[in-house]
Amino acid sequence: RESIRVAETLDVQHLVSIHVEQSQLASTVETILQALAQQGQFMENLLKDFSNHKTETQVTLRNFGEEVEKKILQEVRKVGERNLRMTQDIDNMKSEVEILGENVERRLDALNNRVQQDMSAMQTAFDTSNDSL
Image (cartoon, rainbow, N blue to C red; front, top):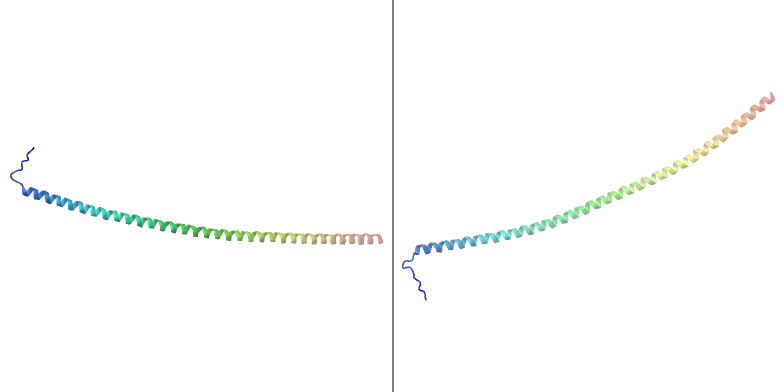
C-alpha cells in the first residue's frame, strides 16, 4: 500500500485561477466552434448559390447559343433562297438573250437574202440595159 500525502496547505487562489482559465478556455473554444459552424454554413450556402448561378448561366448560354444558331440558319436560308432566285433570273435572261440572238440572226439572214436578191436584180437590169445599148 502506498500512502498519499496531501499538502497541509491548499493554494485556493491558484485552484480558482486554474478553474477560471479552464472556464474561459472552454468558452473561447465554444465561441470558435460556433464561428466555424457559421463559416461552414456560409460556405455551404455560397456553394449552393454558385451552383445555382452556374446552372442559370449554362441555361442562359445554351438558350443564347440556340437563338444565335436559329438566326444564323434563317439568314443562311434567306441567302440561299435569294441566290436561287438570282440564278433563275440569270437563266431566264440567258434564254431570252439566246432567243433574241436567234431572232436577230434570222432577220440578218433575211436582210442579207434581200440584199443579194436586190443586187442580183440590179445586175440583171444593168446587164439588160447594156445589152440593149
